[in-house]
Length: 369
Image (cartoon, rainbow, N blue to C red; front, side, top):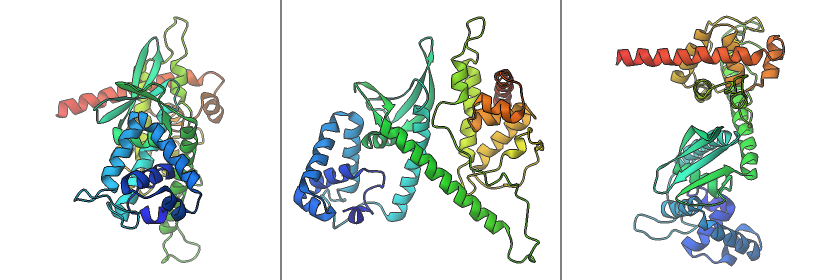
């Protein structure tokens, strides 16, 4: 059945949901579906019952309705069959699947942060990820289309204990496993693109032994994001001697803004970009750029480079490591040769400078406008 439905059903739709829709929308019998996929009819029956029981979840129900309308009904309103695919073409399907994977990776990362939930309101096109900041406060960390939230729920990557007018979803164990897989897939794609770029950089017209050597040995290093919360979130929960948060929400917001631009800058032909020229601990303190000019998401990359250049050596180092690479403070202190427990002070200074940078940029934009 999977081969017949490849052109109509998105790749992210679980097998159980596909078979449920085949039974309820096309009228295929359970025995026919079991015969087509080579399993026992009781297995198909259990999958169909499991999906039916989950329709009490508003996101799951909406996802199934949308799939039925988009992929099992033609323009005249007739139900399609598994042998007569309806709907989008293969290249469009691949593009939509890639978009879903990127959005799922972004949202699941946010939901791994302590106290984070996905809030979905009835009849709203957007859902938001909010995080508990303590003292009965919350902060919005992401916005996502409800169609993506529906897909996450259908895959059982998020779950809601008490659906209502405003339903709050948390990441499930299956969602954490899916996040690890999505991270690995993103890293593999980044590495493949990086190796392809390195191969293209060596011109076949150059004599042997004179190939270009302008890439540093660190350029192929894979950047791995932690599925856990960022170091800023952990520091925000700490209190100073006056009982105030060590990092207030404005400083955390500045760091998260840098991280968001950094992640956006990784999307494009050159995903694993080399940011090592902003790391001063290893003697690579030059801010000269141009190695990857014109690659990746240019606007986001320019914003990151402008912010790190404004911070300068040292502060840009800790900001890049802790906000973008999501390194822990102990590891960052060790790599930069700092004394223990000094990193959090430098990080706070960097975030204060970063906050001022974004405020200055906003003021310049306002004056120009």
